[in-house]
Length: 130
Image 1 (cartoon, rainbow, N blue to C red):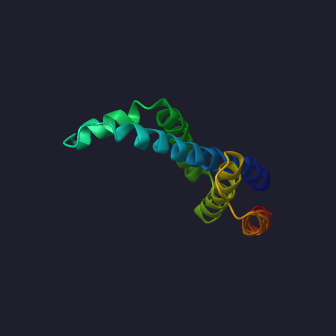
Image 2: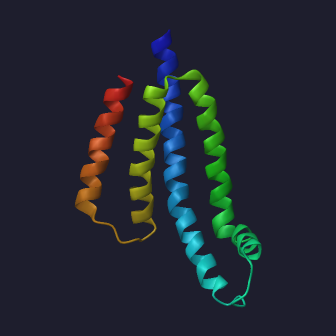
């Protein structure tokens, strides 16, 4: 019974990692949009104005909200699953998903090291959950 529960939790951990990874790449892209736009702000614009402008940039705020939702799910998972499994599985999946999402968005990536790292991550996640 505990193994079946861990299997469901493992799927949730991988899902959280996938959302975190995808939103990391999307938030980076949104931050670049904001950065280009913020260069037109007056030189003396305060930090609060810049933060507000960042949060009003939908290319950043939409993935940010999805990322926060995944964080809430992760904290719920920590109450149900062993931390020694939840953290490595989720973080490893996040790393791999960030690399894949960045490549899909056209960012410069070194394909061979990213593929090797992703394969090792998949192997490590499999070892953690089996």
